[in-house]
Image (cartoon, rainbow, N blue to C red):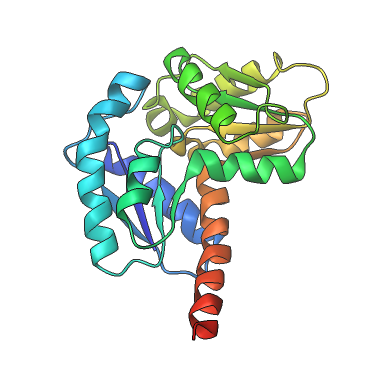
Length: 220
């Protein structure tokens, strides 16, 4: 399993890799950093810059025989293009968290980092058919790098933002790969369960890899 961080911040790769290994300890994960990508992805412009070097890594991972690839950006940067060129499942942490939230809750909300990410995530939720279950995306006004550099402060911002979710919300999705550094603190501070996309994607990897193996065994 290859986890690819489409930004060039190595610390975020390592945090996500640690979370993936904890979520699915029976699987073997490698973490790759897109050295040519932007330092962070905060909105559509950064996402567009990240796609070409990300796709080069997708091809490399696929050609090396990866059983599954995780794109560790909550915007699901380059996900559609990656799936077209890879020969194995490619999982976006945004989509993975939407699917998990849909199973766990009748009404969830995404709390992400910056306002520029809100339209991207809202569009992705709609495209995947989860708008009824996840009707709200809120920005915590937290720069992405704060999650690595000042996790206690970032957790406080996310917790504060959770007070603005609409009535009836029973689950919060932390909308950034870097949220793995703050999920424990946020979970203690809010009155409902929280999930993160890296953990959801790693757990989904287990399901997809098992299904692929069953299909291979049953192939004529």
